[in-house]
Length: 468
View 1 (cartoon, rainbow, N blue to C red):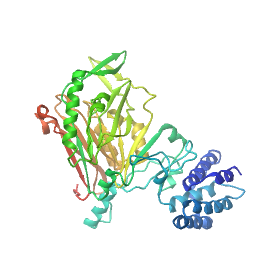
View 2 (spheres, rainbow, N blue to C red; view 1 turned 180 degrees about the vertical axis):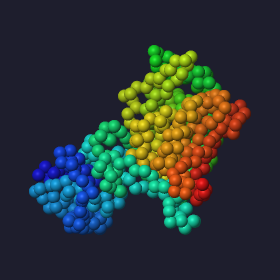
View 3 (spheres, helix red, strand yellow; view 1 turned 60 degrees about the vertical axis):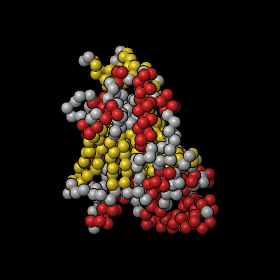
View 4 (tube, rainbow, N blue to C red; view 1 turned 120 degrees about the horizontal axis):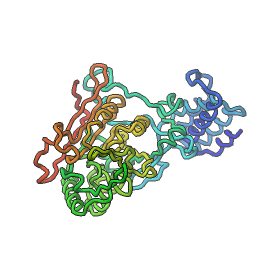
C-alpha cells in the first residue's frame, strides 16, 4: 500500500522509473531476483499502457498523459506489489520512452545542470541517459557508408554496469546508493541553442589545441612549501604571475579567432588573479580547460566557454608525489573539497570529462568515467613521468574513450623522450582492440618559447578513417 501511495504523489515518468528501481533495490536485499527469468509476455497490458502514454504525451500533453498512465499503473500494481511487476515497468519504460528531458531543468546561460532525470528518490536512485549521439557514433556511420562494411569502425566498448538492475537496461543508466555515495556528480549539458551546440551540429571534426605553455622551472613560478611528508603551494610569485598572464593573453588572443573547439593548458600554472585579470571576450564557440589553480590545499581546473564564463570547476582527486633529494613528498589536498565529479554534455559530441594529472591513474576516477561512458577525457598535467600513457591507452582500447593529455615543457625537463602531450585514440586491428597514440614532442616547437608558445593542434576527423 505504501508504494501505491507514492505512485499517487509522483508527477513524471522518470519519478515512476526511480520509484520502481528503489522498490527493487529494497526488496532484492531481502529476496534476490534473477532478472534473466523475467517473462515480459505476462504483462502485455502494461506494455500497451506505456505505449499509449507515448502517444498521449504528444496529443494531450505530458501532465494529462501521465495522469492517465498513473491510473493504469495503480491497477497494475494492485494490492500485492512484486519485484517482477516493478521490473516490468522498468523494462517497458526503458524500451519505449525516448529521452525528452531537458526542458525540466534550470538553464543558466544555455547550460542545463542535472544529476538525475528524476526529481524524487535521488538519494537512492539516479537515472541517467545511456544512449547518446556521439562523435564516435557519427564516425562509425560515415565509415559504414563509405566502406559498405557491415561491422562498426571500432569494437563495441565494454560496459561497466552500476548495479545488477543497470545490466538489464539499454536506454537509461540506473545508479544505486553505493554509486551515488561514492560518486557525487553533476552533468552540465549545453542546450541545443548554445553556440557550441550549434557549432557542432553539422560539424565533422573536433579540433583540440594543447599548449605546453612554459619551460620555466616550477620552483621559479610557485612557492612550494614542504611540511613533514607533504608539500603544498603557498603562492605564485608575482613576477611569474605577470609573465604567465601575458602569455595566457597572447595565446587566448591568438586562438579566439582560430578553428579550435577545445583549448587546453597544463596543470598548476593558472591563478585566480590571472583569471580575474583576463579580459578576453569573443564569440568563438570554444571550450577552454584553463589548466589548474593550486589554492588553499586544492588543485582545481576551471572549465569555461570562449568568453571565459565558468561552466564548472573540477577538483583533483589523486595527489602527486614529488621526489626531491631522495625523499618523497605527497601533494597535500583537502579531501573535503575534492569529492565531486563533473561532466560536460555536448549534443552530437557526447560526454566530455576533465581530470588532473595523476587522476588518470586513479582507479576510482577511471571507474567513474567508465560508468558514465565518457567519450572524451581531457587531462591537464604537470609530470615528468610517462605513467599516464598506459591508462589512456586502456580507456581508448576498452571503452572507446579518447584521452588528451596536456603537459608542460618545464615538467619534462631534458628527458631523452621529450613527449609534452599526447592523444590516445581507439583503434581496431582486424578484430583485436588496440589504440593509436599521437605524441607532441618539444622538438616540434623548439625555440618558440622566446617568441611565445606555439602549441599543438590535434584534429579528429569523423569522415577520415585510416586502416590500421
